[in-house]
Amino acid sequence: MFDYRDQILIEITGHDHIADFRTHSAAKLFDKEQKCMKASGAASDEWFLGKLISPAVTPGSWTNPGFTTMTLDTANMKIQNLQMTFLQLQNTTGMS
Image (cartoon, rainbow, N blue to C red):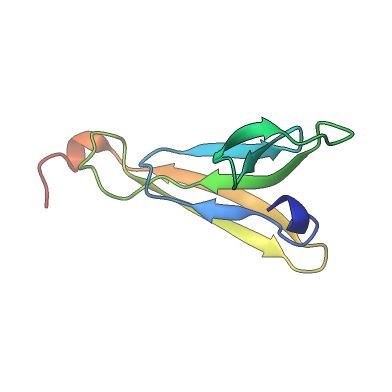
């Protein structure tokens, strides 16, 4: 991911049943050969590739179900109007 950080705008994921925003640090990267995190030797501790974790719509994990909406401004390649909407848990508990 570090090699392509100037080409990837954002990574959008789900499945964790939580809402979160994470980034990677250039100072510590995963070493595939040694299968561990290690200092990369980068000149700076550059943060790159924002990862948006969107909430899930299922109440099965006892978290508030929700979803994420946003728009992409294609002129400057920026995410805008990011909004996370959460549903009322008591209205969904026990539903299948």
